[in-house]
Length: 526
Image 1 (cartoon, rainbow, N blue to C red):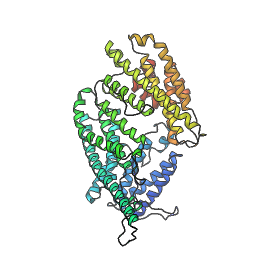
Image 2: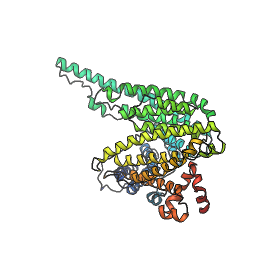
Image 3: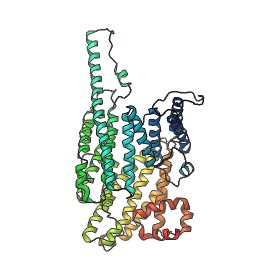
Image 4: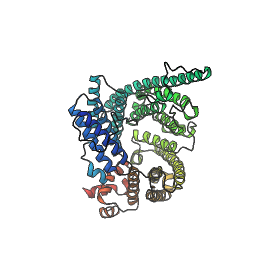
């Protein structure tokens, strides 16, 4: 995500105490840079610097209510910290000790701050595209959060979608035009330079800007900038479908997203065709990478799947896909998630199938679970190969910790699927293979736990280490349930009370482990 900081200057660490709004703004930028430096290795220290930065930005706005840069930086930083903190479990000591910081706010508070910042910028006639983009992103985060509960009406979600889709269409149109002009200017400079070299002229009376001068100008739009905007716009479409609670509203949603989807598809095609690494224009243009191309293709496939109401058609779509090569692990993870979204949309889960499903329902449920398991098995193999390659770098890899966490997460998801496949009542395929599938679940969880215990390397970021620890907790808790270790005393001894009690609601919400004592644990806690 693009988060340019405004009014940042190189300052001495011994700068005097700020007194004016501009000085508080500068000090905030300095503190924020310190937070950025510590983010990889010491999250608590990073948050302390971010908090100082936010307080300085806030003071700048109090001293000068027209200082747009201070409002922009403060709102941007609130969103940045939210996106960091949401990855950390609430039970983590870092969050417990720092949750009262001013810079750690919930999304509703952050959106209120953004609304105020946007109003002030509009009144001053200084609404930047970066502020608009971040405003769209914070609302996108809010829509993501609504998938976890049903407290907000779907009509309210639609209103937010309409507002943000309009912003994205505006940004995409403007950025596309600016990118086209930028590339044309580069080509003109190339042409002029070539012409001058040919005729041997040396007239500098009215020199044109060089490519280096052009690219150094503020506000230059690169293909990578446009990629981020179109990817975020695709995510907006994706999340509104993921918030849908039944197939009945899918036809109307398909119509709702048509305008933005058409814009996205056009720009995505242009980026892939004209601005990929394979279509090299000039070293001055930051073309999108092959992995970014895959991101665009995969999120579009995901949306196409979400626009469907028949999960079997979605399985066929992913099975026959030739857009993304078969060596991309994300393809298989997204395919599994895509089917899970369709299940969640219609409240199709193990409990519902066992209580109300007929033979045909169970056939479809089994086919979906088996497809998900096969997809995740392929993803597991590919991520494991990547991890083994990175381990050969003598623990110097930047990606090792991330791959370990990702691999553990995939294996836990497979364990959840095997538990479900082993537990479909009165379904012969499940009943006859119950013990094998049940043992598979336990072995997968042991594997996930062992992988999460692996050394993440010397360059592992603190967020990745926290993720590994969370994966280990999730695997251990599930294994305790499957092995019948469900007394309060056993769970306290194995995981400690603060950790497993925070994870308990998440496991209950899955609806997969109800038959393994989870309800008794909840009762015993009351």
